[in-house]
Length: 84
Image (cartoon, rainbow, N blue to C red; front, side, top):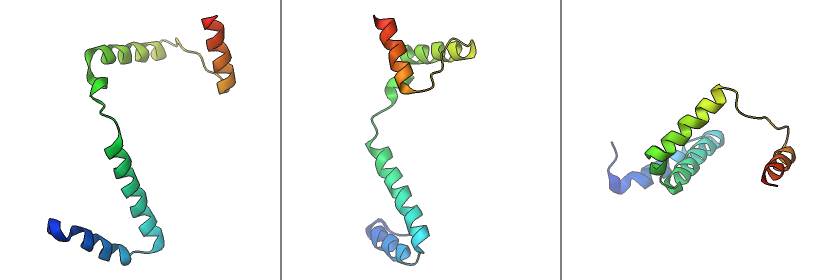
């Protein structure tokens, strides 16, 4: 176990011992951790209103109440048609 005061130095030392490929994998993981830290709070998803919406959407999918589109342009044209 490394003390908190020396953790960054230990990581740097161990990183120097890795191949470039392994170091790239570490960098990807660090980027993921930074991304996850910056994500907005997902507590809203667990509120009753959003859980109801989620369950409704799930039921629609299971019942086949959805439409597939080949591309974004077709989807946008369909939405414009519904709006107009």
